Every structure is written in structure tokens, then in C-alpha cells.
Length: 73
Image (cartoon, rainbow, N blue to C red; front, side, top):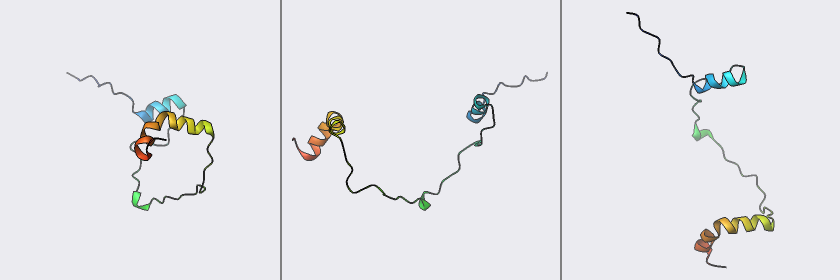
């Protein structure tokens, strides 16, 4: 007796291809990256300007952490 073919769910790449209407360039697993060759650079200025509103948000969300680290204001 012949077997019925199993229904297979489409892969993520196949689903993207269906949604986009064109082939998705990346099939399968992403390439492995050699983290030993990564280079981290810091190009931020020495001082970063903050507005009073930004400071208020940080104090509202992280005030207890700041108090624990630096003591109460």
C-alpha cells in the first residue's frame, strides 16, 4: 500500500519568499561569525548632551538603581 506524503510546514525562508513574492536571499542557518575578528570602536563625543525630559525619564525608571549605586539625592 503506498504511503501518503507527509504535510511539511514551510520554512521561515519559504514563508518570506511567499510574502515578498521573490526569493529570499538567505536560506538555512545564518553564517557563523568569527567574533575574534570583530572590532569595537567608540566614536561618541566625550560629553553627550541630555535634555531635562530625558533625565526625568531615567530618574523615573531607574531612580531606585541610581540611589542604590550613588546614594539618595
